[in-house]
Amino acid sequence: MVSFFDVLALALMICVPVLLGRLVANYFGVWWGVGSGTLSTVLCATLLTLLYRAKRRRQESKRRGLREKYRGIYRVLSVPSEAKNVIKAPGNEIIVGDYGWESEPPKNKGDLVFLQGLDENWRVVWYAGFSAQQIEYIGPKPRSQYDWDSSWFKAPPRCPFAIRSRKTTSMGLPNIWGSNGPRRL
Image (cartoon, rainbow, N blue to C red; front, side):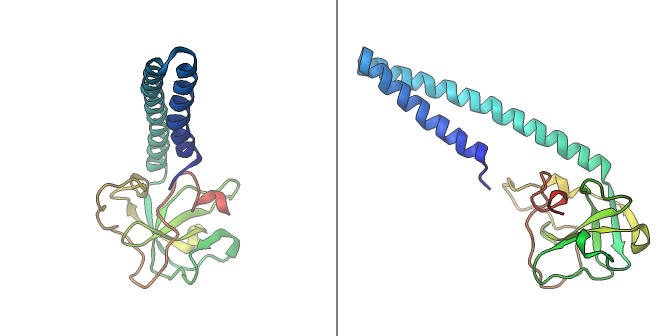
């Protein structure tokens, strides 16, 4: 998914060298304009590289924290009683026996445990808050859903504790910034 930051980066890489090159070319000649445009391209690329590295470090830090804090896999014993604590893709249902991966809760949600129901391709099918009596702890995660993001270059391994196999639609990959998780409740 293209973010505002990516669009801004593209605009910076195109506009700054072109505008600076034209401005310098008007006052000092074409070759000085080409040189200043080239130099500004190198400087913009360096700046963007540093900014993307900082952004990636921040995301890695957030993922590391989520991996360490939310470590469990649970089995659903009963469907959540409050519909306001459930987000699911259209037409999907939470079924007793589904596995849920512990995930980041929204703010001010009390003592509920929030789980993501993932399909075998690590896509979120449902996201819900359960009380302790509605779920059963299975064990620690063999790997975290927060290890995967939308920048995969190769297919990830199958999700080891997916929901029961059925035809479903998904809400996409688990997102640490809340596009399909806690901040939407």
